[in-house]
Length: 266
Image 1: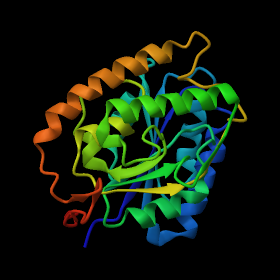
Image 2: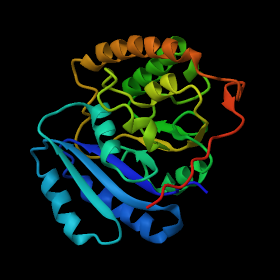
Image 3: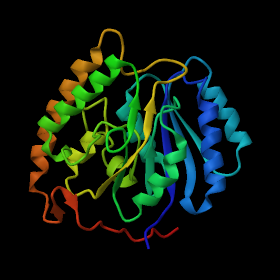
Image 4: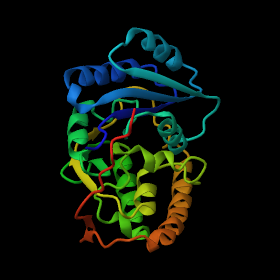
C-alpha cells in the first residue's frame, strides 16, 4: 500500500491579509477528513515585511491538529525555488502546491487527494471543465502562455492547464530538483517536460481574481513575459534530454498504469 501522507506547501510574500484564513480553512479540512492524510502545512516565506511571518509563527502555537512549519528565506528567490525548498523539508509522500492568496479554493483539495491515489500528478485545471474568472487582459495572457507551452513542449499537450499553480504530486519529483532548474515562474510544465512517465489526471476548479494584495508574478512592466519565454526555451532543452525515458506505458499521451511506491518505514 502506498504512503498516503500529504504536505501542503504555500509560498508567501506579504500575504498578511490572507494567510490566517487559508491556514484555518486547511486545518478545518484536515480535521474533517482525517482519511485524506493531511499532516503538514509548510509556509515558505520570502522575507515578508507586512507581518505574514508573525501571523504564521503565532498560529504554530495555536494549531495542534497538524504540523505548521515556517521556512523563512532572507530575500525574494522566486516561486519555483520556494516550492522546491518547501518540498525538500516536507515529510509527506505527496505535496500539494497552492498559492496563499485564496485564488486556489481549498474545498477541492479532498478531490485532488482522492484522485491522486495511484497517480503521480493531479492538476486543478481551469480549462478541463473548470473556469477562470479574471480580468480580460490577464485571461488573454494566460491563454497565450498556455498556447506557447503546448507548441514548445509537446509533452504538455495532453494537459489542458499545464500552467496551473495548484496541483498534488509525489514529493520526490520536486525535492529531487533541489539546486537544479534555472526556471523561475512555473513548476508544473517543468515537471511534465522532465518526467515524461508521470501518470497525470486533471480535476476542474474555478479560478478567481484575488481579493487582497497583488500578484507577485505579473507586474506592470510585464517582466514576467521575458522570464517566461526564457523558461520555455530552457524547458525545451530539458524535454529533449528526457526523450530517452521509456514512454511505452502511454496511449494517446496518458499513462495506462501508475507506479505505486512502497510505504516508507517510520
